[in-house]
Amino acid sequence: MMDFINFHLLPGITLGAIYALGAIGVSLTFGILRFANFAHGATMTLGAYISLTLVQATGWHPIAVLPLAMALTGAVALAMDRAFFRPLRASQTIVLVMASFGLMLMLRSAIQLVWGVQLQAMVTGIQRPWIVFDALRISPRHLMIVAAAAGLMLAVHWLLSRTRTGKAMRAMSDSPELAQVTGIDTEKVIRATWLVGAALAAAAGTFLAIDTHVETQMGFKILLPVFAAAILGGIGRPYGAMAGGLVIGIAEELSSYAWIGTTPLLEPGYKAGVAFAIMVAMLIWRPSGLFRGRSF
Amino acid sequence: MEQATGIFLYGLSLLTMGGIYAVLTLGLNLQWGFTGLFNAGVGGFFAVGAYTAAILTTPAAASHLGGFGLPIAVAAMAAMALSGVMGWGVARICVRLRADYLAIATLGIAEIFRLILKNETWATNGARGIAQVPKPFESLAGPWNMVAMTLVVLAIVGVLYVLLERARLSPWGRVMAAIRDNEPAARAAGKDVERFRVQAFIFGSAIMGLGGALMAHNLKFVDPNLSEPITATFLVWVMLIVGGSASNRGAIVGAMLLWTIWSATEILTSRLPPDWAIRSAYIRIFLIGLLLQVVLQRFSGGILPERRGLARRPSGGD
Image 1 (tube, one colour):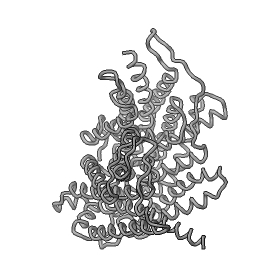
Image 2 (cartoon, rainbow over the protein chains, first blue to last red):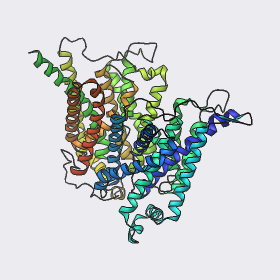
Image 3 (cartoon, rainbow over the protein chains, first blue to last red):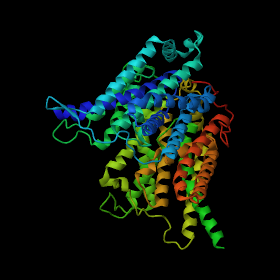
Image 4 (spheres, rainbow over the protein chains, first blue to last red):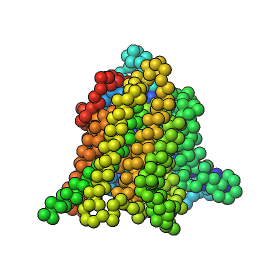
């Protein structure tokens, strides 16, 4: 039982929190700009590398440099929108998807060019888990990631429910035509969407790097779980994305628990397939997601 | 003289690889150009074809499934059949999805294929891949084996082109274009949209499987990196978009052109100092991505846009 909690449930919650942060950006872009942004994974990678560079330059803790990394990643996302998405604003959805597909690879190769391809560590040294009640092992890293992610999600909640921009974002996600008629400045909302989505992506990438390591494929590896989380939560529903992320993260980690007998239910090599299976099941049976988001 | 031979041989290998990519691009054109199905898992079907061909033709080895000793032509047909069956399965699940969802789902399926190729070591030798895949005409002397291989690949491209061109202009192809351009109208006209889409997906996947088989025999080696989204899926997509989607000639021209650029830049960059030569691979991918963006923004029809009486869907959200 304790093994289940220590080695599956707690890591699952951590991973879920990371997916959730990534999925908010995908869900917002999908809801407001109406296309699946394949470059979101590469944005997460970029955020992780920016954090890494800041950590190396200042010697501070990754969480301390995170706000700056989030801002810088957001700035890059605004530049990418200006160069690659804005000129295609009037095109069909699929052209935007293709542009994002291309941008995913441009961004990744640019990262490989600048930072090289070797694995790098964000936090060096081994951390011992805290042992509570002789049995519960809590890794300080996991605790920190979950706490910081929860803080960011509260901030997103505040943004969406209290600020003008956030309300405009929700309105545009619900009905862009209506939002436009009511005089919302769509370009401004789109910029805010990129900024928020990319900043959260930077946080997700940084947390993933703290949990594991920094490498150029890291964002691509979690792109599908992040999409799955956004779809599970219902496209255009940021709160759904948070819940979806947790569900996917926990499901992935629980899939390798020895539910029957002593061998893992699913070989750890196939963990990545879990998110995909959940996603396909959702797309078939309930395309609007658990939280009744948009379905196309 | 020696230099001339070198250039000749290089030209042959360029034509062979370009031809194999043309097969893949023609398969994608059937799905995307004809029918508007966004398959982001080209690499997956390609890998299924490549592995099927490799397993069925390699000599017995302890490290992977094999020892069937089938002739290359039979293995290539089996590769097409298996990729087609996979395509059928995928299409049954995903074909109703909106374009972006289909893209996400197919990308996921390709990644699952890759997980299987990596993890089922008993069959595929995992990440180490399968070597000793026979190359056709290996017994021929000197350059003739290469000439023969090139001719076979080009002949396959030619046959596919003729067949696909006929398909495009046939009533079947017109239904496909109608579905792509205006699905509600096609539905209203009583067409079974789902069935036509499944058909396009199966045929396109089978052609990609053939491309995979040709690649396995040409390289004499397969490994899970064959289905890398960058080189397999992305390059084929850019080839089709640059060449002109919905146009079979565009698909072939795009494949040949992009492969020439891809391959020629490798020659140029391999002369750079080692430190930069490693980095140049990333510069090349970056530039291919940039090329895609430029084409999307400025020449959305590609080099050889589709020619038919019908106008393409007007721009504007769908």
